Length: 286
Image (cartoon, rainbow, N blue to C red; front, side, top):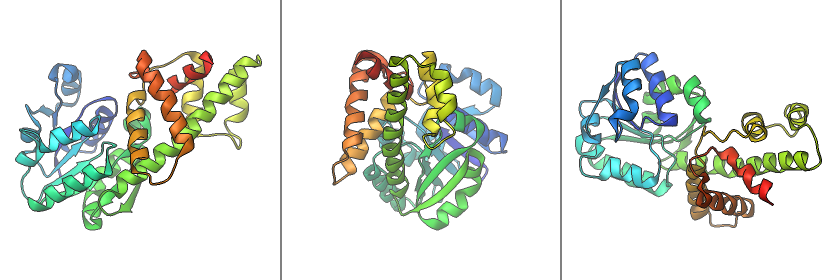
């Protein structure tokens, strides 16, 4: 596969698409507002399409990396959507974190049109997207997964076939559940350090490589103590992910439920466009 349509040039999608270009793929991209990516178009030389359908036309694969399940539904099933433009035999790869039930709907619609559908959400934030080190969790037909590996290898480092359609999304839900607890733990540690008068930078240096260490501590701990709320991953998208995980779970998830409540409150207060490290504000108010 060489000709690729890419829909969603945001915080994550920009780095992912740029790495595909570096790997030699020919990209056509779509985003709702062309003016927001004029610099990206100039830097990469990729073409911009006027709709998801036009972005999909003539492509061997179409990758989507948008925000919410509603956005996924719109770009696939809406007027001038991907399913109306994709040609038989094309690969449709949704890398958005979305509802596993929606992944099954796309797979069924794809089968009817002789399309190869994969759900392949990612983890690693904007840094992983830029550096091509994302963890990619893939659901769908295993033969289709194997055929798509060159694409995934251009964007990620840890690439795992999880099982049938929707399995990638369910794995990402497990990822987000684990992050919720780890992120809350870092917030509590930083808040504790501040309240007892520690030099929190030294505190993090002391503990981040020990048994308490985690990606969340290394990536977000320094941002918390420096007052840096800039998004590597939007808090509002984390809220969306946690809601999906709770909807999918048949059993109580008490830690996730508590972390979700805290972040929903922050989103209402205007922190939705901040990074997930903004959760520290819940602790500084209490």
